[in-house]
Image (cartoon, rainbow, N blue to C red):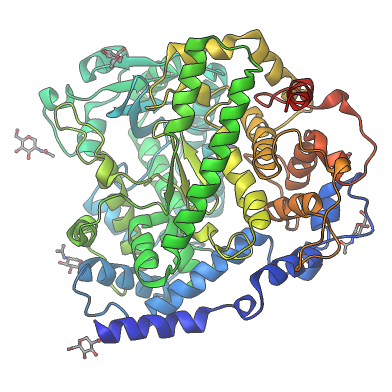
Length: 632
Ligand SMILES: *[C@@H]1O[C@H](CO)[C@@H](O)[C@H](O)[C@H]1NC(C)=O
Ligand SMILES: *[C@@H]1O[C@H](CO)[C@@H](O)[C@H](O)[C@H]1NC(C)=O
Ligand SMILES: *[C@@H]1O[C@H](CO)[C@@H](O)[C@H](O)[C@H]1NC(C)=O
Ligand SMILES: *[C@@H]1O[C@H](CO)[C@@H](O)[C@H](O)[C@H]1NC(C)=O
Ligand SMILES: *[C@@H]1O[C@H](CO)[C@@H](O)[C@H](O)[C@H]1NC(C)=O
Ligand SMILES: *[C@@H]1O[C@H](CO)[C@@H](O)[C@H](O)[C@H]1NC(C)=O
Ligand SMILES: [Zn+2]
């Protein structure tokens, strides 16, 4: 044990970045200054002012890539060391992760561009029905294990039409048919076109969700029985009848499976194989090297990677936890003050609902279960057989493992969520780095990747922490109170009270205001606006007005005043070169719209003010504050 600790600290010593040698606040302020573009006015385009210099000052695309890279470097160093080799707590898990890493970095046979890897063809021949188990989802329908809408502790299987994003995989399938003779099969094009036609015909904004038993599902939709046998590894109808299904897009599913029932089997089989190949191809890192393999493993084997990082690399869990809890309780206290002002004029009953939900928000550092016993971790991947020579075989094994873990326990009678063992293990191909909120758990998870400089450091001055991470946590917290999140109560169950609040005129007016400038996603827009307002108020106090104060400069920052520094530090989350963004608006848009809806921003940078377009939802009205200030 002594030598293990010694090795640990050596590993860490190598990783200490330069900025630790100088004052962390000076380093942070310098970093912010490097990213500035002083040719722009902060009032005209704040993102460009705060971040316009980033791309010439940094070798990274953005600060996310920077912290992901730090994470990956540390993990590469671990994987290539002998650390944990004779571990007494989780030797099997560590061994499995090393095998996977070794094959990923050393097996030079590429999947991409190799139209039919012989091994995949063999796999299909030996396991002709293993596609679902092998992680293939979203072909004719989308299937996922989730919790019931009215009971967040009860597992259900959700079935719906495939996500529009699956079209990219279909396009690749059609491309394969054109490129490679061995893929071409008559009928595949027709099949794909028919599916798209049906999806276009039936795609609805908020489709109705039916709750059915297995027998009911089979009566309504001709999904073949073999589907469930494959998925669940069981074949007794009475076992299946313990399952609950939540089914949407019923018209689509019915017509789709009727069509498939009568369609020739050869093109169907080829299409499924091609989609499986595309999944494998898309999951392989573009270039396999130590760091890309780590990123790949973060997504596909989250428990193993997080366990290793947490135990062998992450140093500041205790300090970080304390800081994060402090920030969250400040945000909650401020939101509580908002609720006292009751801008939306909720009834006492509705207010109690929102307050309970606010109080109940949990924060979790790292996507890891609460369970602490080493056996749990050591055995979690037990059923996966990784080898040190074959990346493709390992990838298929990882897919099967993921599906098995997702479906684990579904067939137990009244299967419930085991909160001690719960962590997020969904079908991502790229791991999350940014914090995220889950309605059903009323929990914000902050990935350990995120808790690294320059995004966060527990030694930083509060102004850096409460602006950047504060606004990010404020954003996540506000997901609990936007038009979708509000529907879930403190325990993560959909509630009629939440629906009632959403229907209030004042609530709808707030949505309408935020919608006036078009956005990719309204709930993201709301979380952005409310999150920044909440973080600002939590740090400076409600109704702060910088025109009334003189600021003494910080020792580490002589040019910008505290409120200016707050905005600049907040913007660092969004600094980067601007790629097209999918689920959110572009970063410049997000920053500019957010600061534009914080009425104090204009005072802080001496901009001309125009109050007309400011959108606020929960924040007390300005008059409400000034009234309160009159009475000491
Ligand atoms: C943000 O940038 C856009 C141009 O990209 C500009 O129209 C808008 O006024 C800016 N807003 C702020 C507050 O910087
Ligand atoms: C700074 O902003 C100006 C005006 O938008 C732009 O033309 C220039 O390229 C930017 N400078 C850098 C270093 O990005
Ligand atoms: C693990 O045990 C083996 C065999 O006893 C030994 O050769 C090796 O050096 C040990 N590794 C570490 C990191 O202690
Ligand atoms: C949830 O909904 C299902 C189906 O509508 C119903 O059978 C069940 O009793 C409900 N459970 C709770 C806890 O309300
Ligand atoms: C299906 O049922 C039979 C007998 O009831 C059983 O022997 C077999 O193992 C089952 N197959 C699966 C995949 O569960
Ligand atoms: C694991 O895979 C290897 C290589 O494919 C095989 O030889 C071995 O029998 C497998 N072990 C188990 C327990 O399945
Ligand atoms: Zn969000």
